[in-house]
Length: 105
Image (cartoon, rainbow, N blue to C red; front, side, top):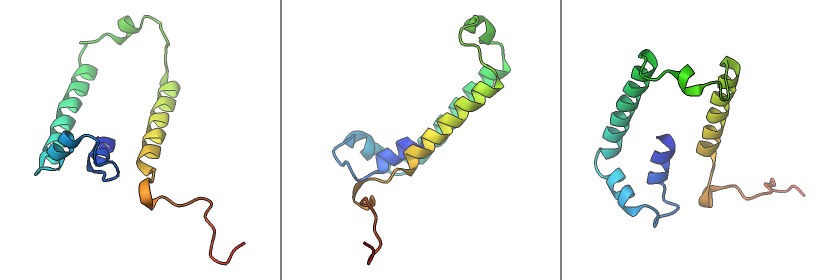
């Protein structure tokens, strides 16, 4: 959601997604939509985890078995790459490389 919010508020590409941007910036649409998606997806995840609607062992059938360590690495990769996306600086505010201090050779 954070990346979507940043993309829809960005000014670098004004011709991209005009209709979605217009809807996103009108009133409190983005706040209401964020909370609605958060509550609905959280409810679905909690229900799937707490009930036996999906039998993961039967569904997986031994294909690519995972343990706590492999799932922790996957979660850390997702977090790191999400942070890399968020931290990217673009457009005119990006530093010009190489950065040299004034007076330095």
